[in-house]
Amino acid sequence: MSTRNEKEINERRLAHEIRTALDASANALPDNVTDRLAAARRIALSRKKAQAAVTAPQLATAGMHTVSFDEDDSPLHRAGAWLRRLGLVWTLVALAAGLIGIYHWQQQQRVDELADVDAAMLLDDLPPTAYADQGFHVFLKRGQ
Image 1: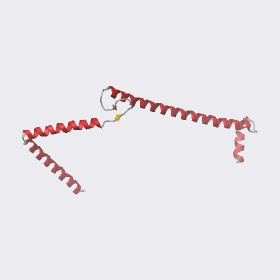
Image 2: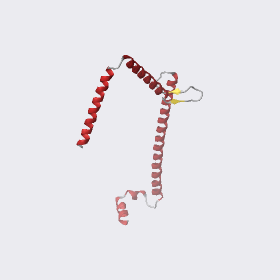
Image 3: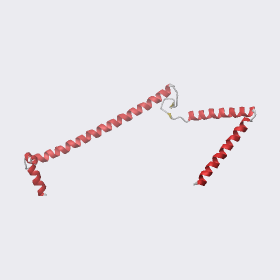
Image 4: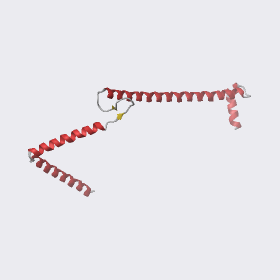
């Protein structure tokens, strides 16, 4: 384990020495080289920004221009945001309708079960008061 720590310390020391040497040599570069490096950096950044704009998600709709969802305040962007909100609303409506449907179905199942119990009680030969008698329950338990 100590060799691993020593290896990390040596790597950090080497990285520090390399960074120090690069910083020192960067200050010694001629002005035309630093200008070209700065221009190359600006070009690379502008290309990266252009590439990021191209890869933004887009929605193609029939009869309309392409709707882009990048950070733009154009009418097409607002239409795309509206479509996304509308999709979210319809999703929530469908979820609520499904939950309400499940609740009503469960309630109907409970009503059907209670109706079956009531029908069995009414069609039985025993009077309904027998079910309320505590002694009858004890009789049923001993008989089983």
